[in-house]
Every structure is written in C-alpha cells, then in structure tokens.
Length: 434
Image 1: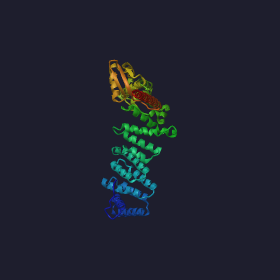
Image 2 (image 1 turned 120 degrees about the horizontal axis):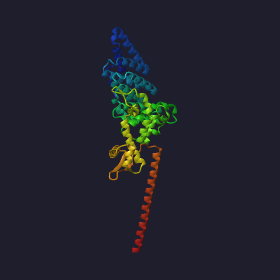
Image 3 (image 1 turned 45 degrees about the horizontal axis):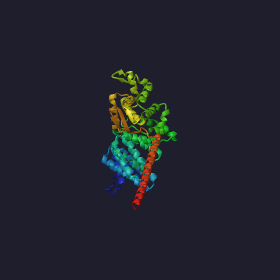
Image 4 (image 1 turned 135 degrees about the vertical axis):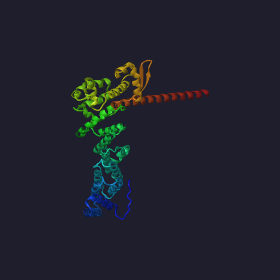
C-alpha cells in the first residue's frame, strides 16, 4: 500500500487538484487557464472544509481522467494515491462505499489505456478499505479491468487466495454468482488454468437450486459450457454435474438437450452409446454440409459425424479416446474383478494388440489399480475411480462401512472370547499346580 508523505506546506489534495487542473488547461493559454485552476482549487478547499468527500473525489477524478494519457505513470500513481486516500476521511461506511464505487468505476472506463497501472491503483484502493463488501466491489472491478485490459497475469496470484477472501466478504448468492463466473472467464483464457476455470464455473452453477427456477434460465449457456469443458478435458474423468439443477434443466431444453445427453453418456455409459449418439444426431449437421470446405472441396459425407462434436468445440478423436478410458472404468466397476481381454476389446472397439496399452493408459491416468495377467488374458482390477459420486455411491459407501464395522466388531468379540478362555485355562493350571 502506498504511503503519502507531504513534501510542502500545501495540502496534498490541493496540490493534486492544482497539478491536474494546470495540465488539463495547459493548451488554453495562461489567461484562460489560471482562473479555472484557481476555481477548482477553491472548490476543492470548500469540499474539504464542509466534509463533502464524495464531491471532492468526483472533482479530482474528472481532472485526473483528462490527463491520464498525458501524465507519466509515476505522476499518475501519486495522483491516484491521494484520491484513493480520501476513502479514509468519511465516518459513514455507506459514504465510503459510494466513494469506492465512484473511484473504481472511473478507473476501469478505459481498460486499454495503461491497464497495469489502473489495476495497481485498484489494488491500492482495495487495501485502504475496511468494509468487506466495499473490498469485494473493488475486487470485482479489478477482475473486469484485468479481463478487458488483457492483464490477467497481474490478477492470477490473488485468485489463489480466493478461499480466504470469500470468507471475509460474506457474500450473498447474487454476488457469489457474479464473482465465480468472472473468475472462471478469466481463467478460461489463461493457459494451464482449465481445471481451475472449470472449478469456479462449477461453483457458479452450484449457486442455483431447484427452488430458484426464475433465475435458472440465465445459467443455461454456462451449464452447457461446463459440460463441453468436462468432455473436452483430457484429464477430467469424474464430476458431480449431473446432480446440479442448473445442469438438469438442459435435459428438456430444445437447444441444449443433446449436450446434456452427451454428458450423461460420458458419465454413465460406454463407447457404443457415444457412437450411437453421433449417428442419431448427424441430421443436425446436414445444414452445414455445403458450408464446411477443405482446399476448395466440400467435406465427404463420412466427415459429418465428426463435425457434430467439432461444431461445439470438441475433437472427435479426443472424444473417442476419452470414452474408451471411461468405458474401461465402467467395466472395472460393473464386471467381475477379472475382466477378459475379449470383453475389453469389444467394449473399447479395438484390436487385441491394443488391449494392454489402453489398460496402461488407464493406470497412468489413475483410473484403475490392476494387474495384467498375460498368460490367462485377463485384467485383475483392485480399484476403480467412480465417474460420478451421487446418492447411490454414498449408499454403497455406507453399506461397505457398515459391513466393515460389523467385521471389526466380530474380530473384537473373537479376541475377547479367546482371551477369556485363555485366562480361564491359566487359572485352572494354577490350581492344579497348587
């Protein structure tokens, strides 16, 4: 946080007003400029005496905005440090918030003009504020500025502290949605942050409940995006999207129903279902048949199925690879612990020579713990990753824990019974010796 150190007898606020006014009116000539500069200084002085801090901030911001493209970054940082420090003056938190809104809104109006400096100014303002909600408001403006000004690299470190900030801000549902979606959109365009973007998008969707039907429609596009992001990701194999009301609404939506069906296939079915889905939906792309061209020639009809997934941002071959891994997981969960090579070959629609390589891929992705028995041509599975973890999975876990608890209780009873028998035997032996 920047500290203001007075270097002259004149109040720093009046010095800033004078400096910005002189630079703003520099081209008008001394005769016109001097009266205007004096007028602004007098007006600023009156605001200070009367405690009209919001009016003073507005006056200073107007002049500062006019010279933003003219002044050096060092001068601008000093000017806005003085302006931002005005939020420490009012006693009313409401007035402080009004000032924070005014300053931050003004700063982000031209995001492409020195965006990194503007972001630094907003961070300074954030640190000067004590009211949690005012801090949240300024941070949200910072996200907006970073996105539009293309300086997201400066905001990324703060996103890593979001759990801490979120607890401090104590936000309502509406503000949570705005925050999570803004963060997700920033991370979406940042290389290597796809998983984090998906996580915040999921948080956004989780804020919608089945009782919130009036607002559910606004989440449709983002719900579809979450599905596509999951399907497209090469290293995400499980999620809880199916249980979310914001996702479930897509099932009966005329526009997004196929996207919902695609998610259901990836989380609950196998490769053959995905291929059937492509074939059944190929009609949707017939209208594109005369549009897509390659080196001046129309695509052959055989490409139509691939275009279905390509049209929504997916790559056909990547989807096939992921569905093969998903299918292998499903075999491990639903078949016996020993899966014959022939069953894997049929489910994954591969050659015999490829079976072991796909099992290794699943092990590498930590989807399976298993052993490959080459002699008997079987895969012995000891653990599988659940693609979804809903009510059914919780019930299964409960059953397993109850069984485990019963087994432990049985072992304890056996140990105690044996101990009593042993003690009795030792006691009898002691009597015999006497």
